[in-house]
Image (cartoon, rainbow, N blue to C red; front, top):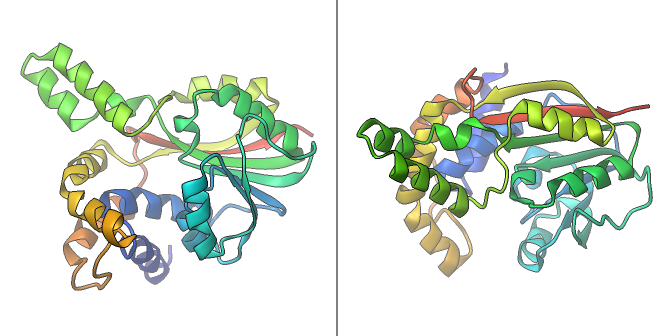
Length: 265
């Protein structure tokens, strides 16, 4: 791996995101650098466009999102040639319109995910590639709060905590690879490669960061940006925390999964 390039990847997320978001987004950014994505490319759940703007050197062809606010905000990044307001379960494209589709940490937020997967398959060309990442079945189980409460005998509160954290994270799905394999197969998509990343220790640092990141939320609401002073001296501590996870992303107990899939010919 190129140490200088990897350091740049981490800094470009830390410069504009709270560390607990930057640490996982930087890892995912590094994964995309090794994935071939033939054009045209659709980004399903493009959000505010920040991730695409820093992870890809050229604008992607189309970004689609169901919310006006993030879609409007994404215009400033110029990360897409075309932006569309729309529901992933009813994609406004003809069959076989795209050679690649990506969806970065989006599908876990969609209640009707099976319908969305079917639509992705429909708009993909035969042999087209679908790349995505999601939290997996370990995410709620390995939360620090849940583990601590379970160890002291408060199993009921431990489950409630996990449910609460998933709710504030807007997670509708934290599924195992077996569930995803069946879901994708039903839509004519085959898994080419998958791996787990983001260790339980990294999850705990991210979990704590939700509390430490409250000042960043204040600046976002007031000034429209997460980081008030995006300088290395100001972000040194955040860098040290995030670097531990970024340099060792893979874990057999990883709470996120990355999938590279292909539509049948």
